Image (cartoon, rainbow, N blue to C red; front, side, top):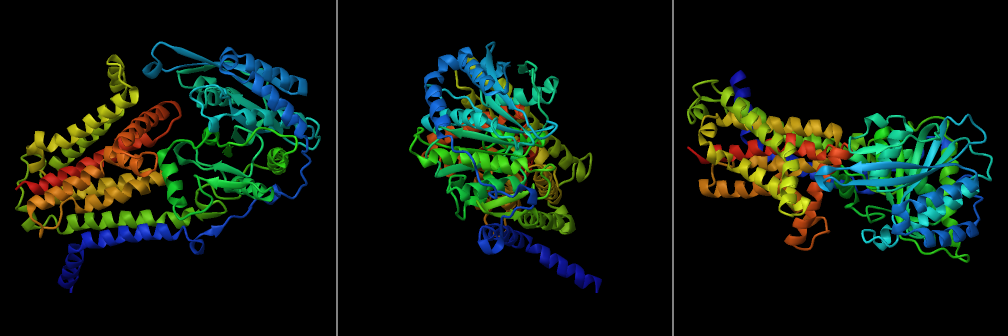
Length: 607
């Protein structure tokens, strides 16, 4: 009886590649099905105290917006922004309104990119105190300062409208007596640098800032921040369509109740929100995972999320203010309605989901529904590992490879795993040297970094050719076991930090890891050629170039290379400044796993 069971197991495991591929295809199909409304859920409000859209908005001061918009158009220039004149004007206007206003100086130095140069910036902050509470809680309404005539800021990235709208709302809020929380109006310079400086200073943790950022202590403080909204609008009229941003650093998401509140209020006022460039389409779920996998914040709101502050971002182009435009009132009414709902919060957001995916703007998939596909992919790797353990160490397979003089079966594979980890460590620490070398030759930092990373990957790919004895000494079954286990464990660990990165990395890496050895029925040359092409495409650099080309931002290989330069540099810098894990995880986990699969291909090619 035992012999029959063993025979059945061996027969089943002999088809593990076919079964594994079926499992991976099934996982992809399952994830695609989640985009269908029959397999996801309609969003709802779990925190009943929010009551979005119940109150009647009172904002009707279109003249406030018109006046401030005209003043902003005059003052909002690069010269005034760099000299601090515009921030000083903002401070004076908020003081006239009755806010506790101040400006905050900070400096930013990043020798790797800027050399010895130090950049100075100024944030403008105003705090509208609550009338009906102890002022221990606060809400943040913020916008970045981008001058209209700045060459780096295109028309759609201007924030003239956001600045004027926030000033108008500040003046309107001061006339209301029903606020139970402070409102912080925050205007930050230099994008993420200025916001990060203010966040650490507000929490009294300036000493924890990166050495590259120094900031002055704020003269006025408020209470614990309950939620934040980031606005990025060029105009204040024409709010019929806007973009909603939810992803933060490392793919962290705000509480779903906050997202649903914003969506419901926007719908009440006829504002059509788009998520990742669309309001509803089957590929929206995939785009959400792509944004999470990047580890980059979708907008400046993403910097609040690591501080456990739920936040969302709203952006759009808009049009210039107009006294006859009802859409101008809509801009203020939408923000007021959001603030009225958040003002009702009696405790921090906790009722709804923090882990979810959005297949549509008004539908969600919970963590219990979208994680099984990754488990199915890991099951395919587990079957391959079991096959290597049960069948691969048989006498027939063992006789095909000599054992190392020291360490038996485990020793050579362990040494190979250590070498794979060393290549990952090299890719992690080397970019600083790549960028400095590129600067010496007057090459763009992104190009220098990508060329350097390509050289590291080429060295890793040539490793089996440079040290063939290390590959020959490895037992085929043990090497296959190490490759499958390392990839499976790495994907499982990455999924705990960033599910999108783990799942999207598993789709190309898991199949090529299963098929790296290739079926014995194929000729050796054909088996090696197919495996080499597949593994090259599934390499970190290959995935980066392919992702840039397929994402729609690149129309040719040249533009894809340029996009990859920016993506590689951005991932590294965000890891240094914002604490993004994406670049580090790719270097320390995914690159070593890819190298083990690559060595497995050469182990089968050499007798």
